[in-house]
Length: 43
Image (cartoon, rainbow, N blue to C red; front, side):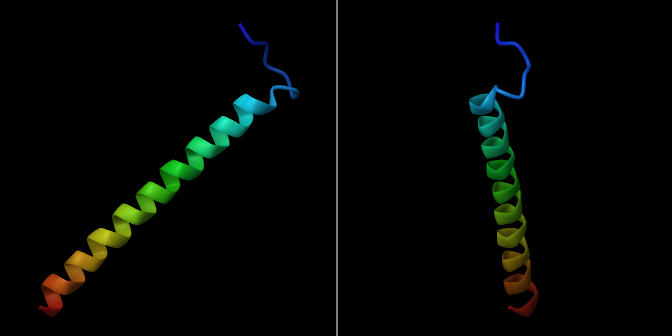
């Protein structure tokens, strides 16, 4: 078991990387959906 300390850099970096990946994926999904909706409405 790893103790929670400020020296636990790899775990913190992994958590930040996961958050960034999730945010990028959400933003990409929203962008794609809005683009498809725009093409549907402007058709």
